[in-house]
Image (cartoon, rainbow, N blue to C red):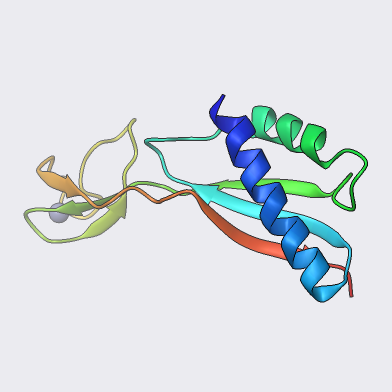
Length: 113
Ligand SMILES: [Zn+2]
């Protein structure tokens, strides 16, 4: 299960940072792209399981889904690709290329003051 591996690796990093700064973590934010999306509920559940009985227990895990960026071949406009309206937002052309999908990233770890 993809989410379990993600949760474990996020947990390891948060724990490392918490130890390094000797502070209790409050929340963590991760982001992912559109081609390899993360199920928010599954990853939260998996994180709760790995964090149980550790300093990470009860912290909030936020998942940000990054839009896929498309670039118009006609006017070179860059826009957030929308599957329900797959056309350039400027000139309505349907000729466009996709930028690279956003990677899975650990965006931010919030530690206690
Ligand atoms: Zn265009």
